[in-house]
Image (cartoon, rainbow, N blue to C red; front, top):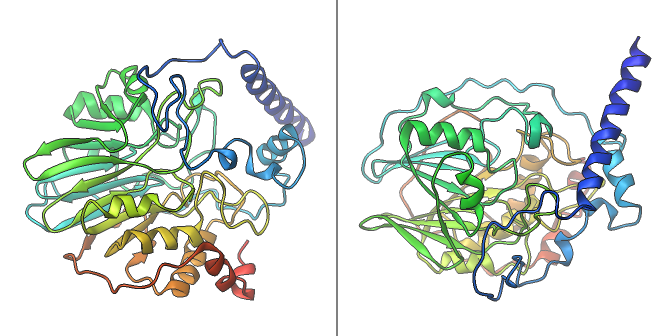
Length: 392
């Protein structure tokens, strides 16, 4: 019986893969035009691109050292690539946050993955809200191993939602639909994603890099550059833009990196130029497609995350984008362990991982000590140690 179930499961998985490959060779089938506008230094009139280059985001990272695309996806989807085991479930005790947090006090609760609740200045802010059980279309995709750190019904009234791009682990239409029906929050995203969001019934303000929206006097959301790509259905690749965000606030800004690779490494400085950053959310997971890999083109790992934190000059930061959905090869707790080693390499303070569903206060802004900018090669040399290499 076990053998029969395994054969059936493998057959279904093969059919899913073949369906995905079929979609990629029928470009009109699921292509969508999410945005139309004038060409720019990151839009060619049809699709967006990274001005610092797209070579590192165009192919599956596991094929960079040889092997076919189909073989890579088969090994990844069947778990036959020698990856370390992950827990099936991670215990979480969901929090019940207060209705509001006034003044310059800042209370943060990590919901999981890139979803974070920030409460300050009487505003309730959510980043990339995803309460779905799976991160993918049609109920497929990686399954959540940690339940959300706040039940959706226990969320306080949400005033502001930031949506970084249109991948399923960052833009969940059903979650946005429920939030919109309940609270009608202001939703800010980057160009084209408003079209995807609109199909849920919600309305979003879509902005280009460098543009900003005023939430109330003294509080703006600026859409800022990062290094990534976008797609919902393979053939609609880069029809919508990806971004990071800066929320300008009295007492120091908030930075949300979204989902990003390192690229030219200059975009954190562009965000920092908008004012001192009191609190940042920086991804550290989904960076390893083969053993020993330290970053992927569209996903920074802990080594580059520590460099991003340094270049932001952020006083405090939360590590996100790990420990919720298994997207790549690395072990469950490898990202925070490697982050601790990377932070030690550059002397970072205040950039930590936190448990899902445990609210914490962000201290008032104090300027961090200035240090010379560390280059990526220097960081990798520092991490060339038995302790770092032992982390799978």
